[in-house]
Length: 188
Length: 215
Image (cartoon, rainbow over all chains, first blue to last red; front, top):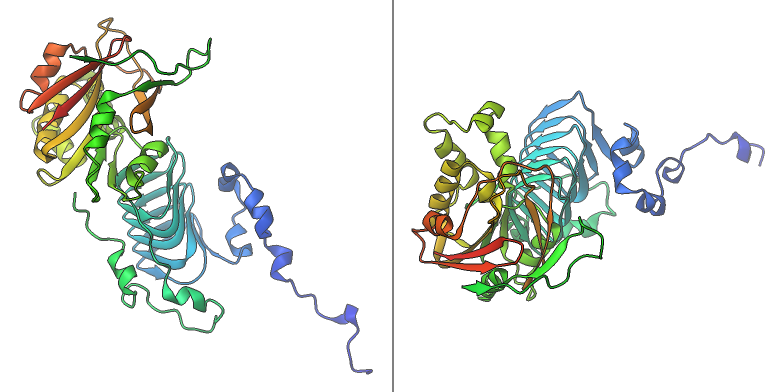
């Protein structure tokens, strides 16, 4: 039909695959190269970035990956996603995420369903509960480590429904989540 | 006195800095004490070592003990000023503050403690205060594993990184930088742990004494 636009006339639409690093390629990136990432990498990967000049006070929760190069004073709750604390990043508060990688500083308890990785030169003070704790020797870590099989959040299977409202995670946590809640005072 | 066998498996010939694997009777006894079929609380003051974390938190049965990790020497360096460390003079209350900051645990709450060789790299008054605190937080009949180098050359030495390979084997290598080291012999070690119920020595031929202390 004459009104049908030609293929070349269609507005250019960047698909995620054109901007984001493919999963397979991301796997191939050595972890040591990670700190030298471009500042906007988190955004191009579909995550969020808290830049190095930003200071946030209060609780953060949501359903996307987050890279912290600035400072957060409060709990971070991303039960289905990955939190990366960059080399200059600082989190003062409890963390709950699917996966946590720390290059910078964390003062608070951390819980991750899959893995917590503390890289060399990172500084972490607080307890850790995760299925897989990984701490490099040059890192400074002070706290309890508990290897647990944490059940993934029930709403993880509902990821295909992006219109679902983001719930405040901690108050509505499942019993398993509540039991493993970050910020729990250390017995020791 | 029990004597450790000589090196179980030394590193490759000619590689002087290669890690040294050896059988550890002290570790063996300590690990045996952890087989209670319930999660226990273990304290490791040697700093985060991935093998040790894996071994303790997912110990064979998968029961998973809770492991507290701290690098005692780095905590000491963070806490005290360079001047305090250099002069070895601490104003009143500073040592108590430090002990409370690194060993803030309820009495008799720890089921095993790995202190490795860390006490030997601290000023004597701090080592004594820490040993007294460890006595309080260790559960009755629980074990503490310590290492002491008995050579008295006076030269600075690098602390060991002690890696648990299995329930009876340690891999050890010196981790620079070298630091001032206090001299201990069996008599001074006995005196240091005199409030404990039992002090058992295992000696290796490299003048390294493994000491297993029972609360």
